[in-house]
Length: 571
Image (cartoon, rainbow, N blue to C red; front, side, top):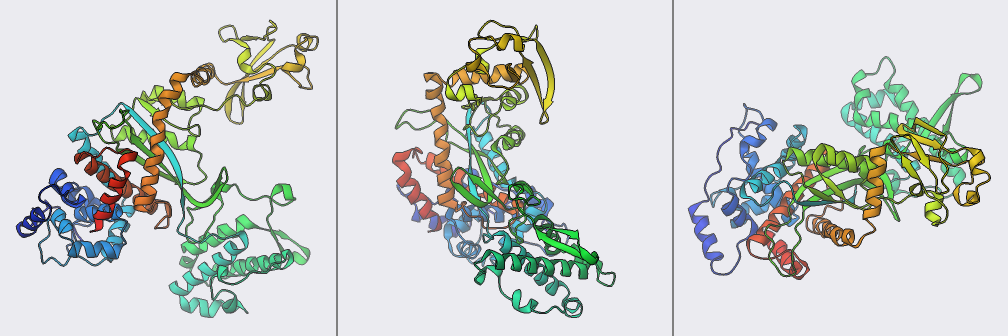
């Protein structure tokens, strides 16, 4: 398939006339019509040319397919429904510049388009193009305020326990081999009971209830998996079969769930891995532990009382304080979406978010975050590298003295950084000042003399250490002072009034999950899911801009209008 970038055709005169009649007077035009009238050729073909060849059979315009994909997300349509809209809906034909008799395309074209976009790393292109246009129109700009929050995304795979995961991984590998080289399967794999054991999905039949029988079945799955791998790595087997993704996934699943050790007679003994606290060999950490053979990017994760298998989505948007009922000077625009593994801490996601905003020339002056994002390093680093002030509550001192609010916490000591010493509340001066590395982090350990601490009348309030002396573990000076300043500021009424601006991002996440169905992933693999998220963010931005164009403020009083607008997108 080839693409020769060309300008979009002007709307067909016959369709344009019909649209003008249908939406004359006070009736608002559909989103597709407003986007074409106000933004014109939003996604030019040249922006997607890297994903298509220069020679071959001409394909459908990638820029117009991008618009179809965005409108599809705005109306939460399937591929087949979106293709029907292109063929039947006059407003979509108007936006795409199609003739009245144009038959459109087969719905499978949309899937192929997404695959090409992901294969060539163009997942963020639609959002980038929209934000560039909004920059030109003055609807978004660098500086000002932005807010970010995260939410969970459920993977498009079934939830499997460890026993089901191993069995299904063997089954997935067998199916992949049977499809790739059925003759090899018939000749090399003649194993009793395999056709019965792996004919159906593992989770479709009732697993044994007793622990003993579950352990026996787990060992059967493991032996079958190792038998399959031994056959694949035999000298007579085709080497390319070992490189099939399902086979590599099976190898990882077996290593993560079993150990093999030499036994009597030289035979290998297979054992299930168990947690260290249960006396086992230990399980791999959550960030690398596979949860499904069909989506190797999905991970199990927990947050407070929530436990899910999937991913995490971070949404950043502009925010403008306004009086109730006033029309905002600009709509609140989503400036970035980041899709990460569910096990990645929010603190690790903030730096890539700032990098993406810098690339789009949309870095804010003040970034509003919840307490899961900041750290002393990020507070200082964001201000230095990007000029961004993090407006966020930081975690309080976790020492037992600070938690109990009894005794002397680290903040009660006077730190003289220049002379490298600390003074305790009783007036004693520290005796040692050592720069060390603790768990890979630079710290300064300050110690007081036991001869000063033992007779001190406040010793019970200060330390319970066996060494009978108080120690302080301090971060570098700049980080320590930054965190102390932040903790003091967040106790003020001024901070609470200012921080209230962050709350609106939760409404944006709710709009995203309810309008575009983001809570459950439609695809498998982090790259495809991220493409779905950027397309959804683009669709939400267009919905918000259309509401702002028509004078509908995005506040709680106008949620009913937004619902009507979203329902009309597929009309």
